[in-house]
Length: 228
Image (cartoon, rainbow, N blue to C red):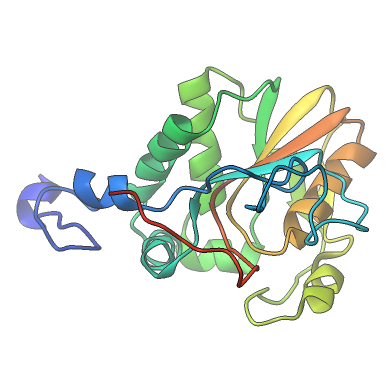
């Protein structure tokens, strides 16, 4: 009924029928190999550590993302996170499942929201994505983390400030076990993922792998080519 009253249009090209049409969905740029084996950053050749993560003690074992966070993906994420278009979580999950292999994890969890921002939005995008992926992969989705203090938005902060902003910001609500898949919407510097993974490791997780819908590219030397 809602679709009859408010017909859906693709957020990127405006064609009717869905919030993300098949043509635009196929054109979203993948995070393509070769990659850093650790943090998943695109590199000139496959390496175990890249200049983004070398010298950093990261609590997660690997990080992977489905699409590059370019201008069009930014529009999708903003609509999904800030404008209440919750169905985009299902589109994001479908794209993640299509482009990334099924994880060797025992459970899925997610980076918890800031309570005030979650109240403003009325839902939590990362949780919706985690639940959709867990359903596809037939894995349990468990809310294992909470935020123990408020932090300012990461947008616009330097890398050092991002790390300080989320340091010790998370706590596990229960004992964690085995290999966990930690889900968030966007990987930018890895600071949030690292802080959340650290809380899971402290609670007993043997390994934490990070998965996000999108990843920001920090290297200006990389050339982005869209699928044709």
